[in-house]
Image (tube, rainbow, N blue to C red; front, side, top):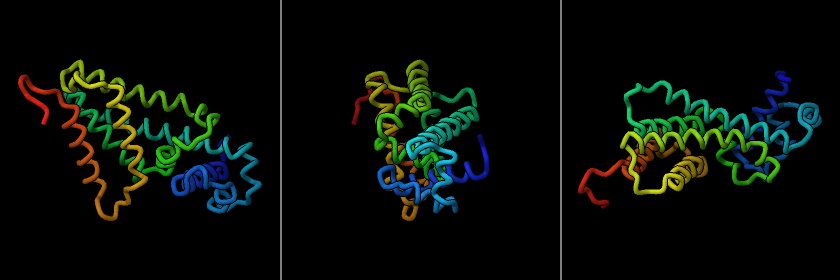
Amino acid sequence: MTTPSRDRILAAAAAVLSKKGYAATRLTDIADVAELRAPAVYYYFPSREALVAEVMITGQHWVRRHVEEALDALPHDVTALDRICAAIDAHLRVELELSDFATAVTRNAGQLPPDVRDAVANESAEYHALWRHLFADGRADGSVRVDIDASSARMLIIGALNWAPEWWSGTKEPIAALIKTAQTLVRAGLAARKEGELDA
């Protein structure tokens, strides 16, 4: 069931979660932001955990869809490493500029109780599958080095991207500079080495 009030509650929950985190988020806070009475939340969601789970699922879907759309817009002849850098751009923009839902996901994924974590597992798995394909394509087209563990590299990159909302405020460094720095670091670390080239 989709109604203006339900959508308002979801948006309010995303905003509160993105600022306060899971542990400090209360239904009364969400109701205040939604400009509704607290009991109205229970009309649409049976519990705080059910509301948080839906926010997290929605946010994870936002991130994946935004990254997929950015990748689909690229020319077909770009390397997989270029696609990884485009995914970095899209991920950071959606979580830092475009969506409280996405920020709620990245700020709270590690705080969730097991039942809520299980509820969002499928959507999260699809996003990680997207990144696994990017790395596999990079090894196949020769743009990504083969002498590192792809799984560890993938988790390190996604973890770093997800941590950005915890420290980046945009007041000292514009998002374009942040994205360029992230892409430069990842490109330098993942780019396949030419014959005879040694790591610095």
